[in-house]
Image 1: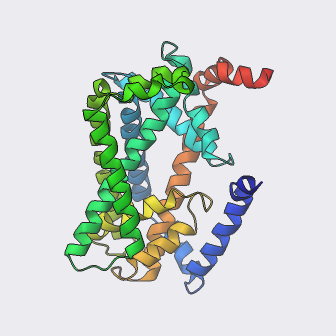
Image 2: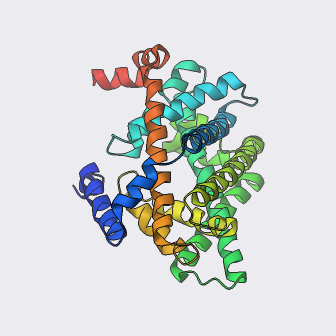
Image 3: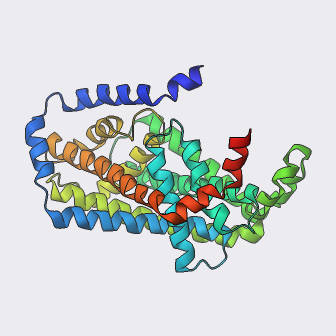
Length: 323
């Protein structure tokens, strides 16, 4: 019961409204809206193209886990899956539903890949992205401390603990035979997943981690560009320090598409180093709207005959309909 309540889209939407109210209550909303609507077309188009490029990078990271040398055609297939998942993620009550749709296309295009391995790749892909967020955030926290910046001790404690856990994961991957874990009786049916979490696949995992780190760098410089355009005057180093921390917190499903929570976090971390609270809110709001816009554009994938055929032929959905 509690899981349904806290996973409810309505509750998230209401919580977002409350957070948005407190973030914008002292701001001239009309002026902010005019600035957003008055942005140059080239600025919007450039950010859309960069966002598409970032989706392609993340899709390539996922493809690396299942295909030794993914081609451009492979990356396009994985990108379609990612776009479809991000679109439906705006409407489904849980992220898990989006993940199911994420691999429907892959399941239909690559029938030779076992379904358990495919599902395991989705989990491992998320894990790799999470570890890079943790390592980047922890490194920036250390850098902030060395530069005399005072950070909340709880954030430092959480990131420190997560960093230790991530290091242990990669150490275990390289130096231990993790395939033995899958020999446990109740894990036998997930045996194909062992091909992902093993030393033989360590090279692909580390390549995926490198791609993830590269995408983070591009994303952080994109955020710097957005802040520059709206006059926030945020330094690159401040964005490198705070943005991974903000992104880690936003993983928590506490608001609708991050709205409200994102604005509060941007104000908390950036207002001291920005030119004004208004410019910080403009930067935050635009980045949130851009994310939703990209997801909606990604929804065009679901209109293609290719996607409809994949859904129609999906064994998973057929079983759901028959059950």
